[in-house]
Image (tube, rainbow over all chains, first blue to last red; front, side, top):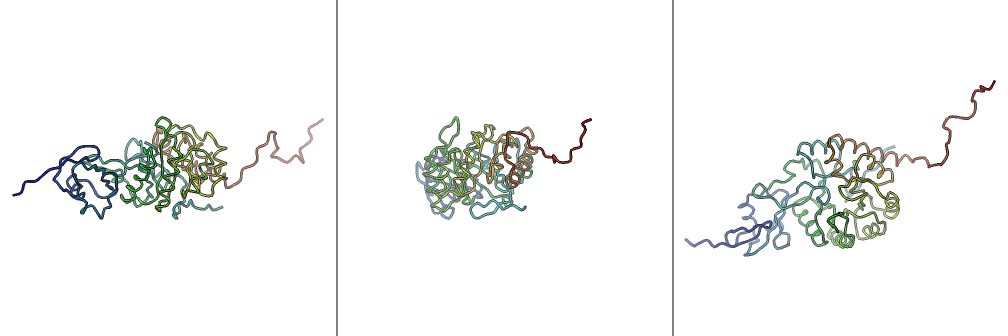
Length: 75
Length: 259
């Protein structure tokens, strides 16, 4: 059995150790994040939902996962 | 006299009150306040999900009922604001955005240079851009020319509750642009909303005035009535102001009581 290699990525400002070559899709599943009204950016670029499975993360990638929260103005 | 609807991004709204989702004491109070406000547009902020729950405010809101208006609150550059709008679109929140580019943390006044730049970029990308701006008629006109769907001048600093501090500038903005003018920020109580509407504004956006009130639900209802009252008064054409009295009873036929 091949050894699973790990890499470090930063998700919402926090370091995570995940399997090497993990896709955005697999990351969301791994973290248990709901897909509805969710958006993802990798290294400042928005990842379209249609690209979640094809987008492979690399060591040091910075991932932002956002959803709507309460707010009015500049809150 | 029937009123026209507020039109934004090709969508029509009979309510001219836009409300927020921040600072409520509970989800239930927020839901009840939204209901009482009669609002059809509700603003939300995009934030990092907190792991592992990943809860969103929209898990608690009937999203089929309201038009969601994602905002770029907390953005200090045009670049951040534009990227936030792309995220909002990808999140499925639509293409109508409340654009904020904040220039200063203490006053939360807008950085109008960044705002103008972001408005241009987003309008070109097909967004319905609703920029939060200051009460400067020159910038309002530039925002319209840049493709803004409306302009949203502040009445006073965000969350200050100071009311409409410069009604004359708001009036000049109304004469300067053809897009809707929506007062965003500064409203503290119902009469502030009425004043904005009496000036001829097309709508009012507020959050803290409702969410921070001791009874948020009743305040939401007060705001609904205030916006409607102001709108009706504006459309009804107020009397002009005069320094001296004008009798409202006929002067003819007054009985003679002199002996």
